[in-house]
Image 1: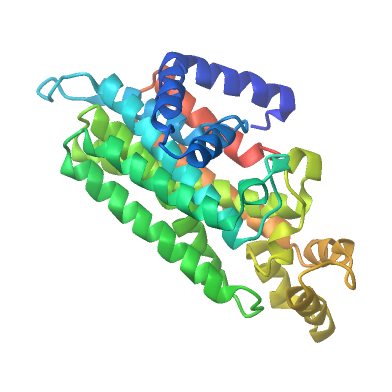
Image 2: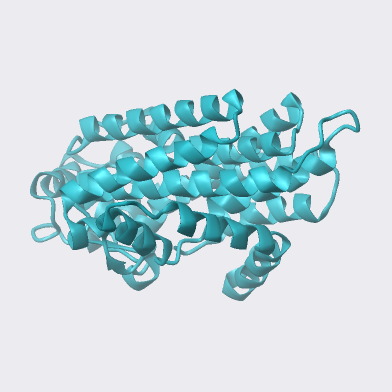
Length: 343
């Protein structure tokens, strides 16, 4: 199925309409919980919240909670899963916001989502500490649920993501990055967070262990596809659509999977072009168009799109195991939005 831009917009609206009331509550929760006694932290939190993020992660958590509630056995505990899901939706978005703050400092980014990045506006030192504050605030909200399984998932997630960032730092500027190296980073940077979102949603609805496991696997595959598409868009999207300069990963010294595939077949002279950019951290001597031509010549982008589609197909197969419902169809539709998006 190929939706096109209009189809994507319609499907996205239908998905978010299902959970709009809960998403509104998540938004209010984020606003209330982002207020700190230090003005700069509050201002940064408000700036992040107003930046037009897609709220994909809370949406994934809320849809998973709704689906798990439908799949729940009659003997499962009741309670108010909606309240817990809203709290946890705010938790995962605050964690995501904290990672963005830290990423922009590490990457010395200048723009995000079409606006000056937080580190440009407030400086690196303030943004690192604001990111730390958001992390701790997220855990404070999670702690109120008095559920060790929630905390266990979030602690494991945070460690995975931090280790991923450290691994990426070790590989900055290196051309000898392998396909397994790239897939490990995709897992740690993105897929693990997607997976935890779905697991937390199922947990909020007291879904049993197999439901939590399957929803987690669905979302992990979705996250792998999402990040691989991101890696492609870094080369192919328009800057206005992407919200940041194209070719930014390579300019920052990161060799992602499209380039890894191209380099497998590249000549020594062609590898030298990439090494020049990695060394100089700009496209002054080697134009970006030369790298695009290299990717096209050796099917780097095409091969990564195929990998992303394979993960999407796996996610669709898993969610198709659940009984058909509005929430099951929404989670199926999310896979198309992820694979076919242009930003």
